[in-house]
Structures are given as C-alpha cells and as structure tokens.
Amino acid sequence: MPSYVCPKDGTRADTTALTWCCPLCRGPWDLAFEPAGTLALDSLAGRVNSLWRYEEVLPLSAPVTSLGEGRTPLVPLTGTVSAKLDFLMPTLSFKDRGAVMLAELARRLAPERVVADSSGNAGTAVAAYCARASLPCTVYVPEGTSAKKTEQIRAHGARLEIVPGDREAAAAAARAAADMPGTFYASHVFNPYFLHGTKTYVYELWEDLGGRLPDAIAVPVGNGTLLLGAALATAELHARGLIDRRPALIAVQAEAVSPLAAAFRAGADGLPDAPAGPAAATLAEGIAITRPPRAGAVLAAVRESGGTFLTVTEDQIRAAQLDLAARGLYVETTGVACWAAVGGWTDRSVVVPLCGAGLKTGPAT
Image (cartoon, rainbow, N blue to C red; front, side):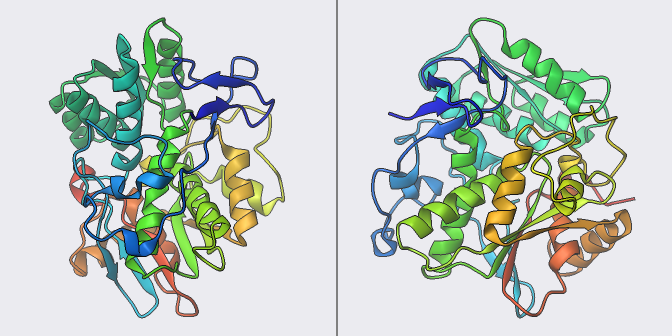
C-alpha cells in the first residue's frame, strides 16, 4: 500500500491519515509508491477512455468520482510544435487530472470536510469532484480571482472563502483550516496523489505518439504540479524501458513572477530564505506563485531532464492568446504562456499544454 514520505527527513505516514504535511518540517509529502506492473502499449485498446486506462501506474483504482477526465486531443500547430488541449476537461482545465485523485482518496477516507486553496482552476476542479463524491468542500481563493472561476466554484456547491491579499495569503488561510480535526486538505501542492494524476498527461502523449515522446515538453510553472507529474511519468516510462530517452522539461514562468527561473539561472537548489513580497500583477494569474513549496523538486527535475526555464512578458502573453484564438483555440491567459515561449521553435519537437479555457478569464487586456 502506498505511504506518505517526507523527501527532506524521511518521516512517513499512512495515506489513511488526514495528515496533510510532514509533522516535523511542515513540508509537502512525496508518495512511496511502486506501479503494479509494466504498462504495455498494445494492452490499451478497448480500455476506458479516460486517464484511468493507465491503472497499472496509478495509486488508486476503480474510481467512483470519475467524470471521464483525460484523453484530451493532441493537435499539431506547426511542423514541430503540438498542443495538448487540456482545457477540454469536465471543469475546463488540466487540474481535473489531479483533483479526481484527491476527491477519490477523500471519498474513501470519509472526512468531515474538505478544504482547498487555489487561484481558481484547482479550486474549481476540487469543488466539482467533491460534488461528485458528495463531500462538503470549502475553497479559499485570493481576492482578484477571475469572477468566472469563483462563479464556477459556487455552482458546484462549494463554500467560497475570498481571502484578502495574494495567492500565498489564500494558501495560508487554507492550511490553517486544514489543521482542524476531521479535515482533508485537498492540496494540489502538498498532497502527492495530485502529481500522480497530472503524470497521466505524459502517459497520454506516449500513447498518442505510438510509444515515444517529443524532444521537449513545455510546461507553465507556478507551484509546478504539472511539471512534477511529467517528471514522474518520464522517469517511470524510462525505468521500464518504454522510452529510450527522457525529454527535456521546459519550465515557463511569467517574467513578472518568476522566482524559480531566477533561482535556476543563479544555479541555486531552492529559493532564498528571505520571505517573498506580494506577487506582482500578471495576466498569468495561475502561475503567480512567489514561494512554491516544492521549489527544490521543480528545479532538480528541470536540471535532471536537461531542460531550462523560460520567461514571457505580458505583451507576449497578450499576443499568444490572440494568435491561438486566430488558430481556433481560445485559451486562458495562463494557459498561453508556453505557446508564447516556444511557439516559434523549429529545431526540435515540443508539446505545449493548453491548460485552461479562455472563458475562465476572458481576453487579455
């Protein structure tokens, strides 16, 4: 059975407990989990058409809460750049991949309440899947969150708590609530089950490309949950001989809020100890994270893959959203960051995720 393990001090806990972080260092958990077997490409025909088709490599099986998430289209945009349309999910964002794992785990643990924090998309996804699982849910979001996202959270029946301040303030409020007895913290940052949901993004690429991966995978990075999921998947596929090389992970941040890019360029293993100030304003609200708790893991994953960090300006974000819309794809402002960064690449194959629908934020202004 999987167990939680702290990557810093080795502390362990059962996944049946509601302990949301390491009790010693208060850092996020990793998951001690070994896939049940090797996933064969020719075994997938006829399986359920959702991310649950990769059951051998998932820490949960036989879900009750599934809404058919996953299996999103892969569409070529240029001769070398393709886009995975992860905004075509039940809640219109890639966060459904991890949220279904958290809600399914919570359903089995039967807590008194579920809490989450988000800049919008993760909260929407957790609210939807908690509704599916008949679990009471409270979502903490920072003031300034898109009205369309807060509307969606409320529509799913979750209690919405709007927190004065930035994304970090919302996270602090949720973590305080998470310490209450009987509470399951559906954190897309602290709970590693979320990462084992986002890793299915790469398993789908592997399947759709006939058992291979592109030269590079570009990922927008705030807390880094999609990137860390991608790193998990590429490591698993490589270890089992299902790919002969691991693609470079290209991490993309908004220039206005780019603490990880700065640390990467400085050769640092983590972020400075000094507390960060409030996040600067950026159109890419979903990745405006000043102190991601898994910063060290994100930096290590990018370096181990031979990848790099890229940053994009607000003008580049505006232009990328308009360009994708002209190609028939209306994507939210955070979700266009990777296209802004690597859309002009011609020397190697790369896939970008279009993470959220444009209806969630509207056009960049």
